[in-house]
Length: 217
Image 1 (cartoon, one colour):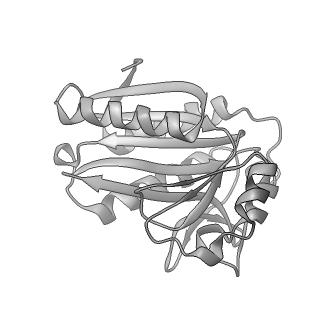
Image 2 (cartoon, helix red, strand yellow):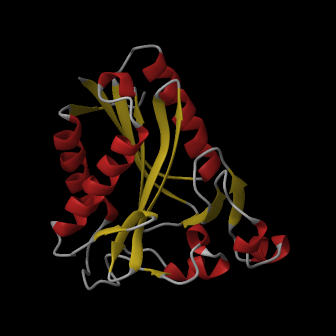
């Protein structure tokens, strides 16, 4: 499998969407079997296709005052947040090269994240009914994907050492009974997002049975 690895650093959410589309076009054209974009985002609340208005706890003006953008997007799921210190991954994969099965794909992403945080001593897993990765009944990684013509976009957001206070501006993923956490909050200090990304890349390579080649697309 020919898979690209793209690590642009920190981007706004809109910049990330443009990069996803450019990468999606490249994969759809057969230039790559798949690609993995790993980055950080400026503070933003993203609203998936299933979001509901009560998930937004602030007014539009209050979000602006806090420097938090609010963007609707085409992924599945509800409201979530991104900010620096969080590892965001956008796998752009032509599932015809693996399995054309959305449930298989979601479980693959969850397991790659579970394995990644496990390498740093954090015991995480799945929670029945809810998509994502959980540690001590708190969500450590959110997952929301889109699949068009069996090519994926969007992906996962793993909280490494980001400021979790941003999540107080929403009802995360529409779930009010459980909180959110990060690798730092689970007791793993001193990690950079890049260090975690390096481990995640290896887990994705094993899961997808491919080697990623670094490129700018």
